[in-house]
Image (tube, rainbow, N blue to C red):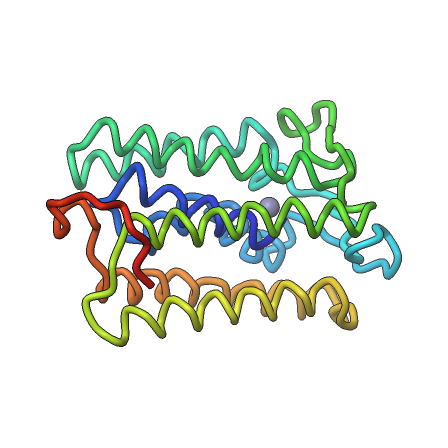
Length: 228
Ligand SMILES: [Zn+2]
């Protein structure tokens, strides 16, 4: 899954208005952000095999550290724990830990059975990536839902709060569509290096959030209207 994770991160703003979109993205995408490092270290392995699934060429041969359920749980405890140590909000820390582990369950819908319960254990995956219409529908709905809830929960403080958000939406949509319909990455290393650039999306999330405010704090009348 790709933009669906970001959709969930945007939607989470409704429940954690005090948390920056950058932190929300970090939570739902943490294991994919760590994945290229483990690929480049040779501890995890992906093979580019055009035609491997109907929607992408990624054969996830081995990625127990980032994409086993146990691995995901440990990353989620670490992330929630660090947030709690810094911000002292138990409830938000639990939500953010939930965001980290949500990644595994969303990937479970899409992937071939390559997601282990624990390193070396049984692998699962419902294989939705083998259907282009289902893949597009699920990702689109999650992404569109995320945009809706993020806009409903925040309002732009200035012009930058509008264009920074919509340019991210366009950027993610184009990147997603080119991953579906564009040429496969030339090699696993190229894929890993380009995956590293996903960290820029975290910075982008922080930037957007700096130029938008939670609606609850600014809009006492609570009309619940969407403001772009
Ligand atoms: Zn993933």
